[in-house]
Image 1 (cartoon, rainbow, N blue to C red):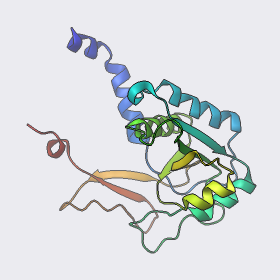
Image 2 (cartoon, rainbow, N blue to C red; image 1 turned 90 degrees about the vertical axis):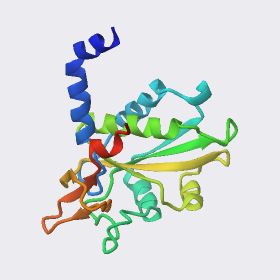
Image 3 (cartoon, rainbow, N blue to C red; image 1 turned 180 degrees about the vertical axis):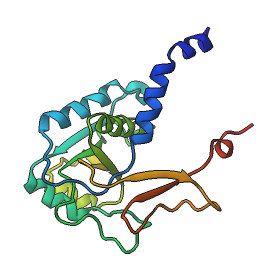
Length: 202
């Protein structure tokens, strides 16, 4: 019965797979195209429908959308560790919004798996809206908390940088176990992926 239902939902599966393929990490954006706070709030709203460990729902979100706040957040972030000769997007290609994921430590010290579930929902939501995002975990937490006036109980976990992408990101088969993403002379971003055969254990 489960298999039959799965086959009947084949179109939804194909649409989901296509959305996942398009849901890449983008690091260069069209800075002239702003994103409304309403759109960002709609993206955060997706998180309410995600599963939550113990149903505790301990994650909170701070939206950053004004040029002034974006300018304060940008220098606190680290970009693309494998691209050692690239310091991050230049003026004109920087994110136009951020969603800062925070753990409410008054509720728990352990988000369980909630942070990853929420981030996938957020980035899939971005993709469905013609936006792109980059999940950033390496940033100056103390300074970010200060510039955003976050209360002590909210610990920033991740920063999702958002905008309209101006770069192409392509996936390719991994060669010789090399996991490092790279850019070619046309600034196309290449991401090696393991094969299904490699990750499917029998």
